[in-house]
Image (cartoon, rainbow, N blue to C red; front, side, top):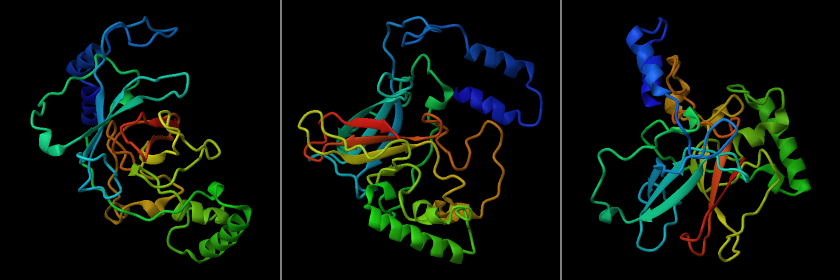
Length: 276
């Protein structure tokens, strides 16, 4: 998949060469897949997990790690896992960075992925701590009405970037409420369902948001969250390359988020995940 992306990026504005066409034909040979479906035969072998995120507590203050650990590694299986959700299943590894000494120079990769958008594009993490507020659906009716009125007034005064010009009551939601993109902790967006508290399957404690895996870092409705360093960038995206707002080049559902929740009593307890 990575080779396919490089070929299409290099061939921008021209026809593929015979060598490139031959390489693409080799990328998609007939094969069996790990999960049975009407189109694929069952696969009995093991599938390597793909690295998704590596977070250090020194870089992410809100990352509450178990005692004796300072590193979270998140991996996922690049296949849908129904019936609960049609998205990759994640695995968490809490580790001590000082004990990670045998680093693989060529980590194993799966024989196949269900969809190209389940293959993360490697990129450098540049964490930034921001302040966000709850989604309006988590607030009482009186407070939602006050926020809606305030949003209309703020949208009318906003002369720089007005993504909420047609829907002024959404100013709070787009500019102050749940921050878009990948994040640790924070508030849930609840864009698909009503708030659904997550309970620890091991001890029934209310779980906290751990990590949001987002399709994109921003969209047309929340430009105010774009980092200052990128707001003035007008460089076009090359064909086959990740969009500037989606450097990881993944897709959750139809452009949603995959949210991971962890038990505050014991992060080693099984985590939960849902699509929003």
